[in-house]
Amino acid sequence: MVESIVEFFKNLPPKACATCGTDIDEQHECYSNQCDSCNIL
Ligand SMILES: [Zn+2]
Image (tube, rainbow, N blue to C red; front, side, top):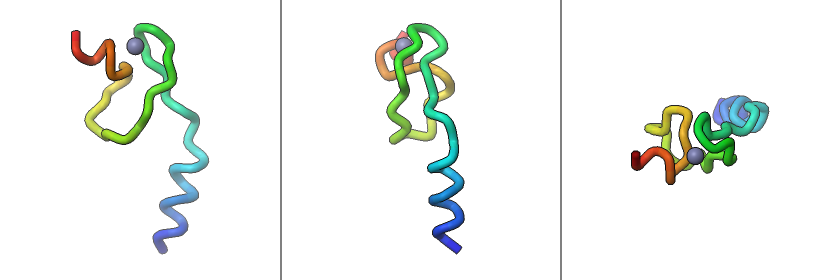
């Protein structure tokens, strides 16, 4: 049931960076809780 998985992720709230509060583009699952910019630090 692939559609169920899609719906699951659709219903997830958007992640926000713990450091700057920017919405995180969740293309990479390796992100913890920081945006691309803060993740470099
Ligand atoms: Zn950030």
